[in-house]
Image 1 (tube, rainbow, N blue to C red):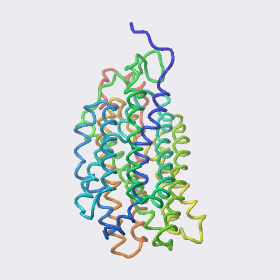
Image 2 (image 1 turned 180 degrees about the vertical axis):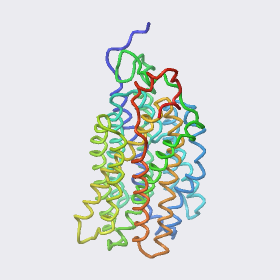
Image 3 (image 1 turned 120 degrees about the vertical axis):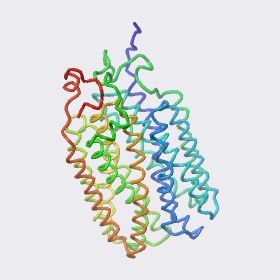
Image 4 (image 1 turned 60 degrees about the vertical axis):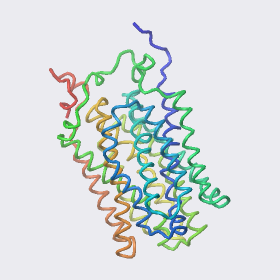
Length: 425
């Protein structure tokens, strides 16, 4: 019998994933919006043209996750995905005014995001932890906020001194710092080093439940509630993140240093606040009903939308209030989706579940901002557009609120003949 190492390595893997997730997702995703108005001024593209890139790429790549994710090691996915993300950022820095080239680099970025973003990191954490899954997931997601805020601090001075082209190249280089961490420290699952989740002497009972098939997931109505709820909430968050700087411009912040500073302050506060949200909500999710914790955070995100619309240059406290509350809810929202999926459908079903949920959420996260752009251009202001965002956010919260009450895994396993993950609701 293989002797188990005395020191549990899960927390070291979590620390490494903290940095790899932050570099691969936090750096590019939370800072690409900074460059939108620079694209607009240099290439004379409309807001709709600029914001169409990500949703168009998401629609073209929605098939990619379900086909690829569950077939390869999470470590390999991260290595390949970060290279693609770096190529995309470098492409944005060197492209010309041809929109089809811009959209092509968004396709490269989106595939990189699917491969190296939330899914592989969620799978790694879920395999290493069961009892402390919420805390570990919260720590890993803190890396997104921390690294994203580092990016927010550096893009403005880099752009002012060297131009936005150099700033994008620097971001691409930072993304590639994930490689040594993944190769040296990250392991896909505890059995790779002869250990069990949480450092337990025996593997958890849930590991014996067979993964649900795609068909079983898609015929489960709780899966659809989780899919709709997360789609609506993530779509609302995406609309706010992508349009925040444009909203500031409409509300009286002038182009240049003034709006750049407002965006930077809000972005940093959002990302710092998301750290507190992830840590606190991660701990609460280990102790209380994940469904109600998730519902509360979804309503919190919805409640920040009216505050965004009253931000003014003469009233900085509204900007701070919006950024802190929105960041707290945003950080918790993203993290709770894999926790809820693992609880409802089992950790062995998580690769297939998230291979559907993440691409669909990415559609919401990207197409909804484009739809908001269309509403803004049609009505001439963000009032109707952000009112629509509020309504969608509330639908997402209600969908999570009516999820069925789950049964504990021990109860499911105690039932005679229960072997498949499809019999656990």
